[in-house]
Amino acid sequence: MAKKRIETEDNSAYVYVVKNPSYNDMCLCAWDSVLYAGTPVMYDTKFGLDLGIIVGAAPVPGTGYEPGCAEVRGACLKFGEEETSCSEDENEHQCSSCFGCQISKEPQKIEVSGDVSWIDHLATPAEMARYAENCSKEEDALLVCREKIQKHNLKMKLVTTHFLLGEPKVIFFFTAEERVDFRDLVKDLVSVFRMRIELRQIGVRDESRLIGGLSVCGRDYCCHSISREMEPVTIKMAKEQNLSLNSVKISGPCGRLLCCLAYEYDYYMEEKAGCPPEGTRLKIEHDLWRVMEVNILSRKLLCQASEGRTIFIPFEEVSFNGETGYWEVSQEFQDELFSN
Image 1: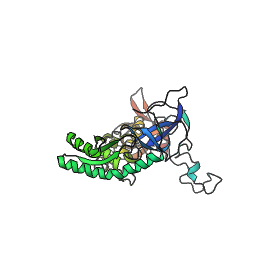
Image 2: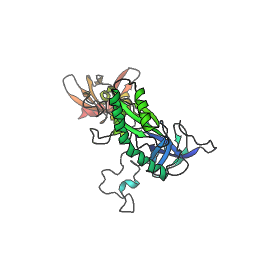
Image 3: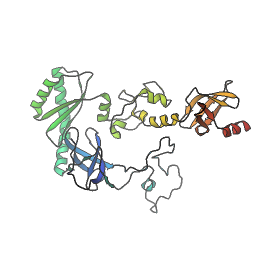
Image 4: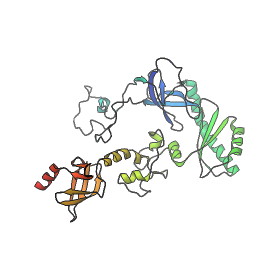
């Protein structure tokens, strides 16, 4: 259970994104004073009291997202400008005063609610020294556990291990194709380490989350660096975005579908809900044109006539007539199209 502060009339605090450096678990935690990125803290994890690192202040909610909004959000406002004058200080980087890709620099006190736990305390020098000592013991613990696995002839792959900082407990993460009876293995490990032992079976996506690495885009795995939870990804997401359905091309090193397939899926679905699907026939003048492609990025429909002619029609020029039950092209667009 997450540690809760004693209830007071004032339930406001500073909320931070905290990341566990050992198994990359991220969560939101509250504290009564201002903390900055890189500050080590002790907080309650799903495994027990452990060390976490402040990533930064949690983004303060602003204006709500409007479904179907085509405006770019989060991109750098100064990108592509040859001359920028962000500040009077010539040595200051242009992004320092650009809020297009930066969250608030100073944490803000907000009302704490929802899935937010409280930081137990700031990590002391003694705890940091013990954390460094535990890290140095983890490699030896892996070797010991692998020997015991071979001894019991268990079909499991040991991924990593972690010594909990807040209590005498060691966690072994492993993958396996089926359930493993590791009761005898736990008894052997307890006799060696003389502390609580926890063996946790994880999936291949969780293995990538723990170990990390570079994905096909050249950046760190999303699950290892930025994702808080492992969201489900389906082949339908790739299909709706007109991507290749070859699983080899849209899968990550873990062998599962790329996490980034889910990033733009909701936007694609919102946009497609407001335009005719592929195969729809549109009446333009006296001809019927078939919608061949719905391009969400350019916000245009590729339509083809029976004799092979093609035209591009912007989304805003097409609307659904509820009375007739058909999609219609605006008369202004038709007049401009045939006047040339």
